[in-house]
Length: 380
Image 1 (spheres, rainbow, N blue to C red):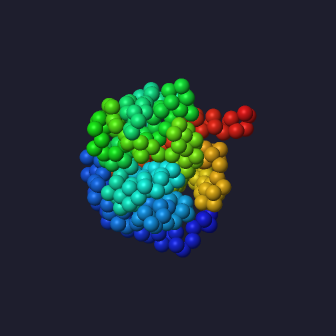
Image 2: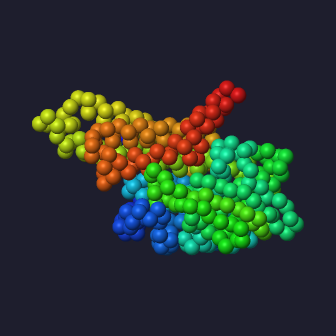
Image 3: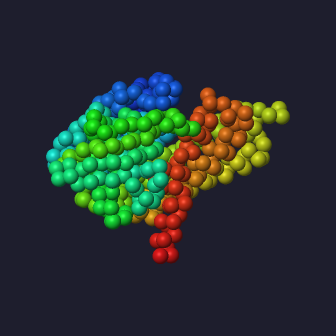
């Protein structure tokens, strides 16, 4: 079905993104995968190309365009290129809104120009060894010491954890407040007591640095409180819908691209003296995946449009996230199976997509958490 959510400007932007990927990302990507981290030069190149801070006001160096459909184009093209390691979506769509909507004027002028140029790489630190989706389990704490916060604790599975120059840390500022006693503190590279652990060895997305972070008596200036004191829970809930949409957009794009790759493969690959595509089972497999992708794409495009118009609620974002990511997982598994032994070889795109995509049903809120959110909205 012809998509109707994009206009000529979006498609022109798509060509810009493809050119950037061809020139600045794909020639280096295999090396980044081996290194377990992308080059900072790529971040600066993205800044020069205008791919960072699309929605950040122009006065701070951004694109000044809040149209979420541009973020969708970025997600689609990076996914189709098989290049999730350069985590522009995390930077733009997850962390960017915290800085632009919660930052004071002084904070915006201090942090956003580097955010948009690629000189300042960002991360957000919520997950801890003993606390994932349950914010009440967070132990990292910040004690009020008058002119600063004294931050202690640790975080894990932090995307951009090694490269990050600026980390938004979720910390307990009112011990008896539970989930409503949490605040957002911005920790900057070089602060005494801020240490990074190892670059974690993942099964996929190896070029996307993911790290443990440690905070040992880190003196965080009072002016680095982001948003309201003890207001982190509300701030996090406000921005989670966009985070989940970003994951869902990448998921459906991945499923569609895997279907394209596999359709081409079964037309060319022969078994029993004829192309695989001539076998009824293969045709049924392709037909089922094509239908599932088409139905999911229609729903996702509606969600993208609603979010661009400020109308998407957290329930439908949760529906989009769990459904699209579970579809991606199923399609990746079925497409690998249709490739046979070749699908298990890392030089084939389907193999890397299989491992890169497995995290999608976990981060940003697991499938089970998404279903719980939806269920509560319907059943109380």
